Image (tube, rainbow, N blue to C red; front, side, top):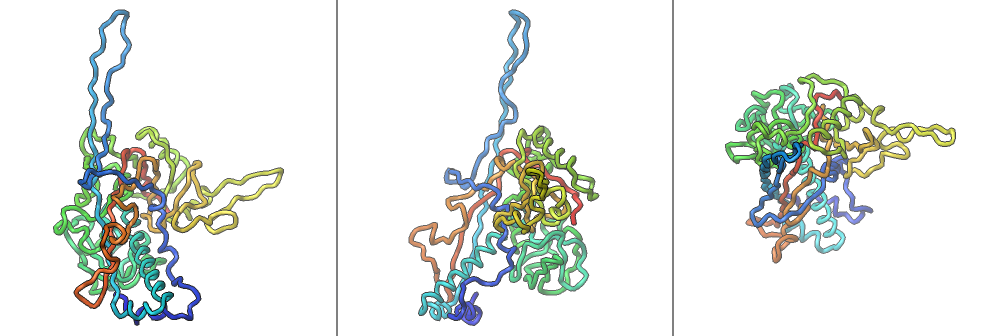
Length: 429
C-alpha cells in the first residue's frame, strides 16, 4: 500500500507538473483500441448466445418440364455460448497519507490522480495481455531453461511489471506450478528478461509460462480466469483444456470446420513473410469465412524485419519523386497515438497494427466486423462506486487504510472464426 513516505516526492509543491516518469510503452494497448466493444443484454445470466448457421435451409435444382419437385433440405443451426469473465482490481492507501495530503487541494488531487492513472495503466496492460494471448493469460513464455538464478528469458516482450505476483506454469500440464507465487522483482524489456523472487526454478522447460497467481491452475479453478484472447479465437484447433472451447463449440468434432480459422504454419521452421504468403492468407479468409481482412497485427520485430515491404509506396507528383514516410516516428507519418497501435505500415491496403507485447513469430489478420469485446454494464473498468449506487469510493478495511475496488466483465468473442487468419513460424528481426 502507498504511504506518505513512498509518495512524498509526488506531493511536493515545487513540482511544476503532476506527470510522473513512466515507461512510455506501458501505455500501449493497441489490441484494446483496435477491437470494438459491444454491450449486450445477457438476460440476467451473464451469458451471451450467438446463433450460428451450420446448414442453410431449402433445396434448389433444375427439373424437367412438369417434373417432380425436390425434397426440401432442413436447416441446421447451433449456438455459441459466451460467459463473461469477471475482473477485479484493488488498491489501498493509508489514513495517514490521505490526512497528510487533504490539507492541500492540489496535493490531494495529485495523489488520487497518481493512484488512478497508475492503476488504470496496470489494469489495461493485463487486459491487453489477455486479448493477445491464447486464453491462459501468459505474461511471459520461457524461451528455455533459465541459466542465472531465477531470471527467465521470454520468447516475447514480457507483459508483466515489477511488483506483480505470478505463478510459473508447466506448459504441458496446467495443474503443475514450476514456481508458486513468485514476485516479479524486475523486468528488462530490451533483453526480455524477468527477475523472479525466491530460489532458482527447477524442472522448467521452453514453453512454460508466467501468469497471475492462481488464475490458470486447473486444480484451483476449473477454467482459466482469463478471456479467450486473439490466439485462442484465431486458430484451427481447440485451446488448452483449462481454457475451454470458444463459444462452447469443439473444433475437433467432424462437421465443426466452420468454427476453425485459417492457419498457415511451416511445421515449426521459421520462414520469411512474403507477399505471396500474405495474399494467400487474405484469399483463405475470403474462401473460408466469406470475410475481408481489415487489420493486420504483429509485434515490433516482425514490422522491423519487413519494414521495406510494409512501408508506404513511393509516389510521383509532377515529376517530383519522394518517399512517403518510412517508419514509426519519421517525418510525415508514424505519429499515431500510443494507445492506438496503428503504424504507418500496411499490406495490400490493409492497416498494420503493431503491439509490442504480441507473440513472437506470429502475424494475425482480422475482419474486425466479426471479432468484438463483449462487456457487461460498464464497457471499461470502473470503480464500484461508479457502478453501484450508495457505494463509497473509499471502503474501510480492518486496518488503518482505505481501499478502492474496481470491477469489470468482458469476453473476447467472435461470430465467425473463419474471418480471421493466423500466420505462424514467421522469421522476425
